[in-house]
Length: 200
Image (tube, rainbow, N blue to C red):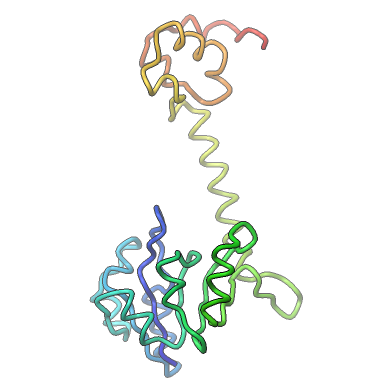
């Protein structure tokens, strides 16, 4: 089978459908793997690393979609990608179709066989591909919440340079609630944080 790995194009997505180690496994099983140039840059894997694992490097996503029997991605295909899919081609990725009817219609129109990671079940009825992603998301949620409550972020009003009175109101009423600890450092009014926030 000819397996293609295009570079992810969704905003702030730095992962890649197959790591070099996974490519090595595919090649050892007799498959041909083609990876778009730069697809692994977000994980620190150069084209040369993929080539050493046995992959061929393609110049563009268009080349990947045109020549592959199966496309392996991380995120759901964007419109510019699903229009390149065709009948008899397999798409293997997270899809999350429920909130995205346009994508669902685009995939149906392409005629491809789309397999969503989040729906793959094992013999016991578990979701082996979704479970580790959920675990990662859960751990990151705690870290993100901790960063906010430690004052790592500033509220939109402070960041936008709201008038002094608005900043005081923000710091007094909402600073503790939304992690605007940097307000104190930026504006130097410690008294707002030394007394309890007023009710309401």
